[in-house]
Amino acid sequence: MKLGKVKIWIGVGVYVFSGAATVAIAAPDRAPEAVSNWEVLANTEVAVERLDHSPVVKIVQGSEGGEGGEGGEGGSPTKPPSTYTPSQGGEGGEAGTMFKDKLSGTQLLNALRNGGYVIYFRHAQTEKDYADQVSAKMGDCSTQRMLSEVGWQQSRTIGKAFQTLKIPVGQVFSSEYCRAWQTADIAFGRFEKRASLNFPPSEDYTEAQKAQMRAAVMPFLTTMPANGTNVVVVGHDDLFDAATGIYPEPQGVAYIVKPDGKGKFEIVANVLPEEWSKLAR
Image (cartoon, rainbow, N blue to C red):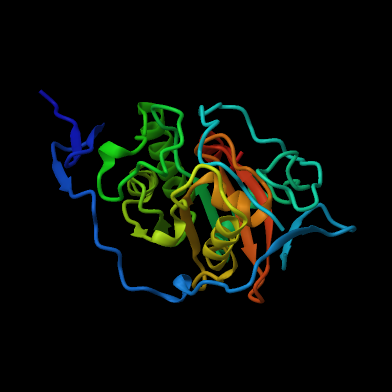
């Protein structure tokens, strides 16, 4: 009888891979690695500004971001809109900020193979749809929303595509939420937890909390990756929304960001889990 490879998270659950008969056990509360310059938080608020001559989002100082936690998650498989209507100060990603893919297909793939990008994933699909940032306890997955079977498959699909397409990945960061680091672990086999990628413990964010989220996520989006590599960040909707004014949906979607080395960045594309394998076509 041919056995499958089984990986178990203690106190979390089980997912099954095909392959050699192996059991790997990992505790859910992995100690974060040493703080790097990615952990240096910006002390200034940031905003989204649309350049008149370009549909690309640039980040400058000043705007409002996401609001309310991860309600509204259902894991719809539809592609995010390629174009958003501009909103001044845009809260909650409503209407969104003007954004249109600059790169796609083989052009995007070749760019990623050269490195220099930050790939921000919203975690893969979860079993249920509710905001858990108030009740969630870090290190206790039973208090949090968990990945569904679809989410496991999305994560495996992403990881397989990156290997097949030979997209170089350097550092992999995730929030401390189980659904985020498990997405990273399944897809890339490694991760560094960062508390700065967590939600504030509230369902209705204050202006100060929105500013906190913007300041927390900006260093991840603006720091240049090591030469010839891309940085992966697996996080949540509201933090990305707070920094860009774009609400990242559905679950599992990735936004590809190009830092300019001067504290700003451009968003060049968004990719759904099942679209990664199609970039070479």
